[in-house]
Length: 592
Image 1 (spheres, rainbow, N blue to C red):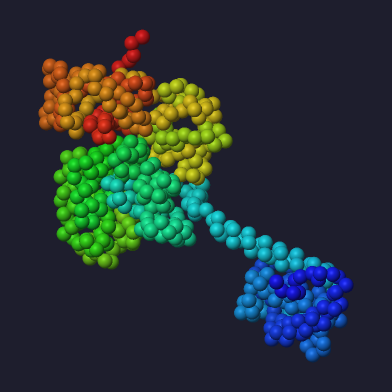
Image 2 (cartoon, one colour):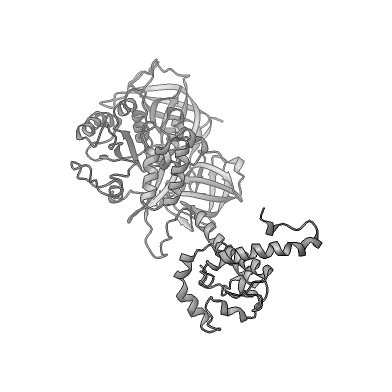
C-alpha cells in the first residue's frame, strides 16, 4: 500500500515522518510538473454547472508556485486530485483540447482566467467541485444505461388521419433446420425492428456456445430451451412494416413433435412462406416421406392459406453456390406435390432463391445470382394484392393464448367484424359477457381493430382460468355455434389400416384442439365426379373421401364451412401424423 494512504501507528510519530513526506512530495512535485495542469477540462454535458478542478479550491498561499518549495500536505492534495480529475471526468488530455472553445466562451463573463493557475482567487464553496463531478458522472452513467436498455424500435404510430395499413399475417413453415427463424430474424434486422447492437450481443453469446450461425434466429426464439437446442418450439411472433402493409411474422416450429403448435400458427395466417434448404441432402430429407416439408404444405392449405411463397434457402452454401440446376431440381420435385395438395402453380405459388444467413435476396436485389430476375422477398410481399376481409360480418376472434397481467389478457387474430374499446362481447362456448378494457394491435395500443389484425385484449368480467385456447369472442347479437356432434367431409391422407366407426383421433379446428370419435360413416364420395355412394360404408381407407359423423369429447365452437370457412376447416391427427383433413358440412343439435 502507498505510504501516503496509511495512518501512522501513533499520531505523535507524525512529526518524525514529515521529513519522509517532504521527500515523497518533492518526487511527486517533480513528476507532477511534467503534467499539463493548465489544460482546459472537458465536460460532456454542456448544460452542467461550470466544472472547476478541485485544486483551484486551495488558497493562493497553498497553491504551489512552480519554483518555491512546496507545502507537503498541499502538494500531496494537488497531486492526488490533479491525477484523479481527468479519470473522474472520464476524459483525457486529447479530449480536453476538443472543448477549449466552449470553455473560453463560458468563462468570458467571469474572470476569463481559463483553466490556468491564476484562477485561484475564485471564492468557491468547499466540496462544490466534487458534487459537480459526481453529478456529471451520474448523468453519464444514466446516458449509458439508457443506451444499453434501449428497447426494440417500434413502428412509429401513423398520424390519426392516415389510412390504416393492411395487416397481413405470414407464417414461416418447412422442415426442421431449413432456416425459418434465421430468415425471420434477418428480415427484422433489415427492416430495423432489431438493433444491430442486440444482434451483436446474440452473436457473442452464440459464439460462446459454438453456435455462431444461430444468432439471427434468437431474435424470434426467445425461450432459453429453444436457443440451447436451436429448435423452435412455440410459434414465435414479430412484426415489420413496408410502405403499403403491416406484416406479422409467425415463426412455426419445424420439428414433427411440435406440429400441433405449427397448426395453431398456420390457422392465423393469410400467407405462408415455405422455407426449403437447397443444401445437398437437406432438401431430400425434408421432402421425402416423413419429412415436414410435405406435411406443413398440406396443413397450411387446410388452414386456409391461399398464397404460398417457396423460399429456396441456403443457396450460398458451398454445395450449391447459387446453382440454377439445383434450384430447378428443387422446384421440379415440389410443384407436382403442391399441385396435389391444392395450390395452383400458376396463381398461388411463387418460387425465389435466397440466403437467410447473409440476407441475400430478402431486401435488396441479388448480385451473386444473375439468372434470377424477380423481385426480392420483402418487395414481393409488399406488391401482393390486398386480401378480402368481412368488415361488416359478426365479430369472431378465436383465442390462441391467455395470461394474467393486471386483469385477463387474451391473444388472437380477428377473423371478421370490428372490435373497439369498451365493447361488450360474449365468450363462447361458456357464454360469459365480457368488456374490452384495452386493445393492443402488435404491441401498439389502439381504440379499434379491423379483421386480419393480431390482437391482445384486456378483458373485464372473466377470470383467466375460465378461458381455454379455442374459445371464441363473438358479438352478442350474433354468437357462433357450439356443440359436440357434426357431420363433415373427410379426405384420408395417410393411414396404414382401415378406419371404422369408433375410431378416435385429435381434432384441430381453428385454434381449438379436442379429441373426437368417428361415430358413424355416412357415405363415400367419388373424388372425380363428387357422387355419393348409396350404401353406408363399413370402413374407409387411405386416399378415400367420405362423409362421417364426428363427436367431440367436449363442447367446441365451430361453423359450417359454407358459412364461415375459417372456422369450418379441420385436420385429424393420430400418433404424431396428420391422417385426414376435412370441412364441416352440418351441425347436429344435441338431443335433450
